[in-house]
Length: 275
Length: 275
Image (cartoon, rainbow over the protein chains, first blue to last red):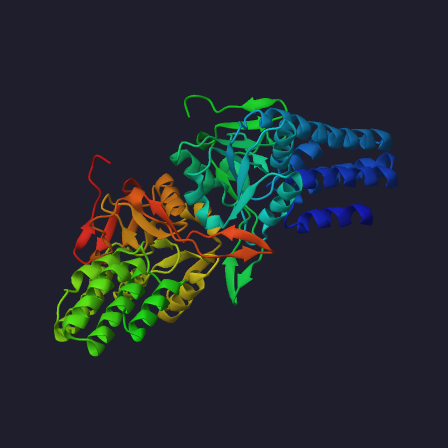
């Protein structure tokens, strides 16, 4: 049995609708820090064993949770748990800054970037590109039914980056007007497929059909060392309109061959030529 | 100057948000019938000349309006105008029935048909397939922001055809679960591109990527003899959410090469091999 304070955080992670892999990873790391403040010795070790199973189950689509649970050692020592959890958070923050540096180099003057849903890594790239003095604009989807696009629009507004919002169904129409496709990811499988908000896959197809390079920004902790694309379990959340149940699978899977590169803090991963 | 009663119908056609090419064509034909009840002789002839310009302008994306305006002769004789307008309506009804007959043959037992938006030709195919005793199910998009999908769901419910509604952004995810793609069209250009509700193009791409055959159902009056795909002007309607303007182009353009066939009352048109 995990302490109540820790279970409550895992429950919050399980219920989260909007925020993605980075938020979940940070929240998971915070759960470890709280655990290290409550337990020690054999009790801590038992709880850490349970956490290694439970943290990834909070959201099975998220490699970040799997990698977090692997990153924290199973130990009697609360100080070690705390230090490793803090290191995980710090590495994540550094990774995002470095993704901003690397990714912003892909944005040329007058670039028109099309994106889908809300990704904090993508926002970091936009922020860095703006700070480097580049002028570019963004086409973004509203991202029904949770409308993460409106949250992104607010960020862009505060950064002074011009943008247009489109309905999700127009992503094909607008891909032809963009010069660069750029999205985040919740998970990258070991065969290179990108698990991200549903709509990413058709956007990648439309970019490909229009010869618009399509990039994914993701911290390396989103690379899942074990999961393959056919093992991904896509979470569904309830949604209804006018009394009708509407299917609401949160993610789709974009095959490696439609992705020009995955921007990580370690550099840009490029698909092998034979794909 | 057109009579007030006729101008009012054209204005209604111009303002229509939801209903597509078939409804507009019928409404246009009714405008001609009303005109034939009000004017005759030289006045009628002058009004018919104006109608030949004005009717297509009510919605420039709609080949049906162009073809209707060409179909009605410029004459002094109100009886001829009325007869031709009634013939246009009757031919349209016959075309739809025949599309139902031809298209329903494409639906095999246990077929899973994915569609987008609302098309009366597609509904006719479903109705005929059901009457022929076939059992199949339909995956349909909600079609934001006007939610034509809910109207389709109601039709399917009344026909006793099982269905699932999805958000527009999931069309890629669900294309892989379908065995047949089927949509209507508002306009087919002379180079074979399909102008239909925005979202059709990414659905066609996703069907293509998943080896799911993608068909379009359209009366032959939707074939535009003059317009090419690069001349299509896509209409935009106002739409906003949380104080943000959201782009809302109604249609997108699906190239011929992603379409397995266009189901018309004359038979199924198939793209030439070299595409």
